[in-house]
Image 1 (cartoon, rainbow, N blue to C red):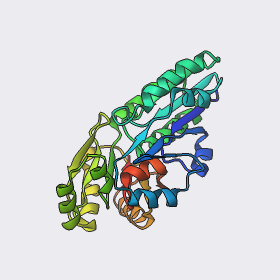
Image 2: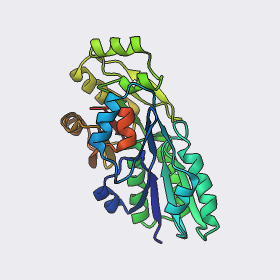
Image 3: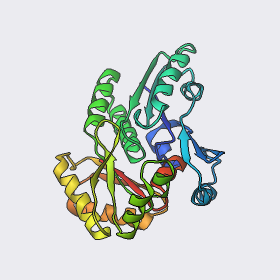
Image 4: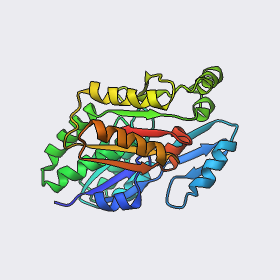
Length: 278
C-alpha cells in the first residue's frame, strides 16, 4: 500500500533526498529576525537570510506551520505519515495533529503523526527509517510501533561554531557565550531523549570534539552495523565530511547522509554548525 510522507521544514530534506524517500511535501516553518519574517520553502534565499541573520541584533525566533498547512499537505490521501520536529521545541507536532483532524474531513482517514523528539538530522533519519519499513511491505500498525521505538532510542547531537543566536533568543547568556568562543569550546549538545536540549560535552578544539563524538557513539550502545547516520551542516561541508570520515573509520554504518541545513535549522545551528543523528 502506498503512503504519502509529509515532513515539516525542521527536517533538512533536499529535493533529491525527498524524491528518493518518497517525501511528498515539506511544510514550511517561519523564521523571525526582529520584525521580519522568512518562510522556509523553496523560494527562500538562504545566503541572503544568513546575511540578514548575522546582521540582526534583535531577538530571533521561529513559528510552526499552521494546522491548515498540514491539512493541505496531507490532502485527501487515504494513507499518510507526518514527521515533525520535537514537540518540546515547536508547536509543529500539535498543529500537525490538528491538521490531521481537518484532513479527515476531506477523506484522509489513515494518518499518523510522529513526534521525532528531535530535529534536523534526527527528522531525516526517521524519514529514512520510515521509507525502509514501507519498502519492506510492513503493515501500518507495525510500522508505527517500530518507528516509535526507533525514535525513543535514536541519538541526536549538535556542535555549534557560533553561539550568537543562542544568545539572541535567550538560551545562552552573553558572558557564557563569550567565554565559550574565546576558549574555543565546542559545546556538544543534543536531545535528552524527550526532545529537550541537553549539554553532553565541553571539548576544546576540533580534535577533542571528534574524539568525544566517537566516544558518545560508542557509549550509546546503539547498533551501527547495517544502520544509517545523518549529518547536517550549515555552510560547513568540510567539517561534516571530516566527521563522516572519522565515524566511517570507527563504525560500520550502512550509509552516512551528509546534507546541508534548510532555513530553520540554519537559524539555530548558525553558521558552520553541524547536527548528527544515528
